[in-house]
Length: 237
Image: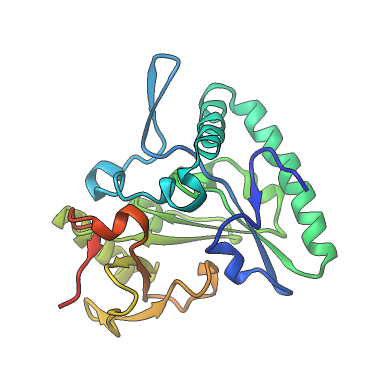
């Protein structure tokens, strides 16, 4: 089935969790700052602070292909220049995706921020699809303190590129029990605890809403991120 805004079965991480219980859709945009018709738009407001723009998964895997990057740019352009049409196409995609997935007896899941960080809880899209489990990773710490729709799950994204930012993410995790994802250098050197918090494997699937609360979700560096020295990727002694 062809979709305009979402993608299903084309992400190496999300497909790990696809099966009889869950099927995940995801949307990729061009991250951070994008020039569109002479104006610069930013769909990842904290990327500069967290220093995650360079190692972003935007260019990992199929993201290296020019046609894939162009498609992601086109979605980003539509998002900023014609939000009404974008939301209409997304609505149609999710309607078809939900119906097909539920027909299979599985729960439809959707991650709107594949390579972006937009506060989707403000759009009202979750209320239109209460049967869909929405989820995202975010570097916007204040989102952890906001009231979210019951079918929207957030995981904070950690980075030590800025000490104040790292502390604010850790503080939010402790205060709200919103989990924090940490990108470690190697999958063969993942600690059992990090900053006093239990660590769970976040690479076995992308179903973050199933994780226990108040933990560190361990990911490991892939693609360009494996050489990152900004502090976004964490080295374990």
